[in-house]
Amino acid sequence: MGTSNHILSRACDAVINAGMVFLLLFPPFFFGSVSPGGRLLVEVAAMVVFVAWLWRPRGEAGYLSGSRSYTSRLPKLALIPLGGFCAYVFLQTVPLPADMIAALSPATVAQHRMAPGLGERLTLSLSPERTTNDLLLLYACVAVFLVAAFPTKGQINRRRLSVILVGTGVAVSLLAILQKATQHGNAKIYWAISCRQDPCGPFVNPSDFAGYVILLIPIALAVGFGRSPGAGPRGSGKWTVFGVVSAVIMTIALVLSASRSGIAGVLVAVALLSVTLAIGARSRRKRVAVITAAVLICVLGAWAATSRLMEKMERAGVAWGERALLWRESSVLARDFRICGTGLGTFGVVFPQHRKGLTQQVSFTNAENDFLELLIETGLIGGVLFGTFLGLWAASGVRAASAMFGGFRAALICGAGAGCAAMLVHDFFHFSLRIPANAVLFAVCLALLHPASRGSGKGSSDD
Image (cartoon, rainbow, N blue to C red; front, side, top):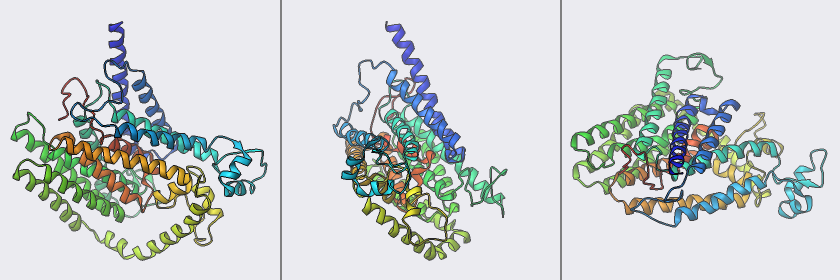
């Protein structure tokens, strides 16, 4: 019995590790996995990994255990609203009696009546097909989050996982820099695939690329300056060089993307991370190194501000005016469907029927603000549930970093938290979390806020 469990555990760990590496490497290089085929691969891989994680024999410890040096009920408590949010989005696709829908959301019934074939049972979602499509991606991201936050004994440890993350970000950034340096005029992805927009690396939209790298720049600094026990000055120096060089490369690519909200988000993240790591550093040399790295990145960002970025900044007035009008008209939907929402992923269907201005554009797929769009699509119910989860999970991360003050895991928690904060700043002006590659990476970064101590047997120590 013990031998069979050992074989099953090894097999499940192999599937989990291979699947996680695939989910970290594949999505960004396949155009962010925005195509139906790429999205399907991400969702299938995430479900396979999750099933292996559930199927693996538990042993003496449960799946939802934390580190030996930190225990708290907050992480488990945070999973309650997250589960509630997933259940509510599923409920949006379930046919319910029309009278019940009318009591919950009269605007939803009125909208349904605009379409022929109104029956006695309706859904809270105004487009169940679109909600189901986004629900699958949501479940995939939650699955990746749970697997990364509560790893099994044989999973990749946190340092190796963070190195894979940073290495992927550097590879994507180098591709974007080479693309900007060698292409003029008709921009192409991978120098072969024509694109109507101005792509950045393998991403069709430069703001989507910015949303990807801003999650990783703080993690690169955390890897570089997180103290690792047993590593001498020479070993620590190698990690510092790796972290700073990686952060600089990704910062150059970010600036070349000319994403204003991305640059603002990463500056906020680097400032928060620098202060946190400087306080946690045990030596004056490390405090100076952290602050110097932050200043270097900020100066480099200002120096790399190309004329293209400045031209984009000069045109910002028109762009902000259009975006403000979009938000103002979208807020009417948030008011009309304030309790239950229109259904996850339905903004592109509902907004064109309610807009009064912005007639020059045929359609709008997103609200250019993920917070507003989430409120429109899931209402106060979804907004409160997801906001409660983020609040509790962030509070748990802060407490964990304080409890493990000065170690690598504390630094990684700070880096992942700063990256998530940068993404939230960026997403106030964009919709990066609707991109599968960015959504999966955000889920992993959220997972890193939980200080799980288990990892691979070889070099399993994270701190």
